[in-house]
Image (tube, rainbow, N blue to C red; front, side, top):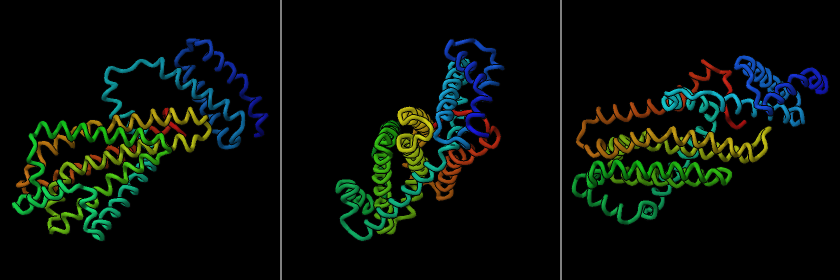
Length: 326
């Protein structure tokens, strides 16, 4: 259909809907939803056949205003806090799987770079981890307790300190996304190189398994949700670089909102990781099977919530509109 014919066919309906929105008319919920669905259908059609046109921009703006009106007038359920984590966020997170994969791949790349650098340069580990930490760990190894660092601080003190620090890192990864995602990539690089050099240090001392079975009790969740937080920063960067049919400012604001939801989703996991580091990791005498069980369970939890569950919800309810960047 030619654009002029498309406009002529639907103009009266759009104008009626626009007047209702401008005058804040209290349309019956059924009628409002019906009009909204039609407008979103028209938006999809215009995106396909009239990209970059004035018609597309008009219909997109109309759909955005309608969406805001629907959700502003919608009564919040009493269990909104629960439904945010069980339905709203995971379903919306489905569309950010590419950013999550990118954050993960960049992290793995720099872990490998950190390990390679530590293997190539004997002074590299000290430059990354610091002389004090390396010397303390060497003393712990000499005393036949290489993971003693996790026992030096009180349980509650460690739990609170680690949790607060991890949330701080997550917020930095998110906020630095405003630099077109480059700041977020720097945070990923920094943490990944540290992890790679750290693990190589123990490998070189013949203690790789001892370090893995201990550190990854809390590290599985901790590192995973740092990557998720980096995903939030990349969502912000994408909103700046690729606004799609939105204005760059609108796309940036939508990216901030989406990224903030992602960061909020990580807080319970950071609390769990802090609890494990403060209260569980210190028990280095635990049998291997128990450590493996905790690590495997943690990995399964992260993969389910951030990868598989969003896919399940998307397939179950694929057509519900979400407030996200294109």
